[in-house]
Length: 120
Image 1: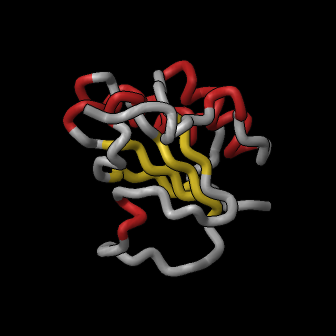
Image 2 (image 1 turned 90 degrees about the vertical axis):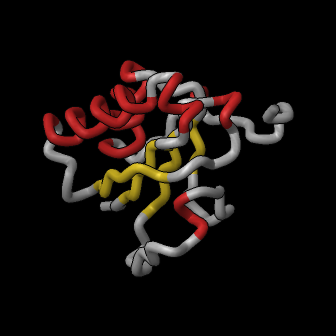
């Protein structure tokens, strides 16, 4: 059974676009499905894709110790099992928790495309 680390951006643009509600939805959905032991949820810094937010990054937990000073809290790392979701809403988060976290099936139609435009 896979384990995950999920980060919801807390940058100002993402917060203005609703990332606080996305984080609450994630927390509540993980609790309702009993998935807190399978998925560590935290707030990440700005990933630099503000025009695409709210942004969420899900990574497979491979047992690597999380370094609190690692750039993983504010940039995509390109690691195997890393998925970037953009334009997230509370409703979309319910799908991510149900499909990606619970069923180990990333929701491809919600994947973000970080190279799709400039962030002004």
